[in-house]
Length: 121
Image 1 (cartoon, rainbow, N blue to C red):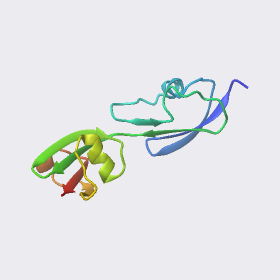
Image 2 (cartoon, helix red, strand yellow):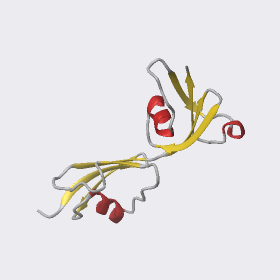
Image 3 (cartoon, rainbow, N blue to C red):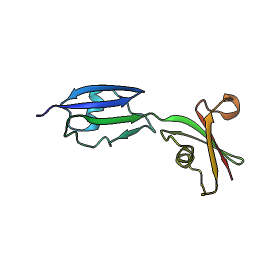
């Protein structure tokens, strides 16, 4: 009764593990999953593990560069959509803005090896 089965998704792998840890954060520590700046954990690390087949997802932050006209912004984000990436990087977006994302193909120009997001107004 004090043990639960947890289904962990992290680093593009899914593992099923037993645990006696009470919270998501304690479980991740015990499992050796390091959470870095910008990573997103669902549910929150403070959430209690109270049932079997409890799902924990860890989404890793990646470097991004956002081009908003002549302005270039850098950041780390675990967001998946171009619009949410731009918003997390601090861009002011409007409904009519076209926001696209692609892998950065020119490290020297972009200053990033991650995702490149372009905002066309």
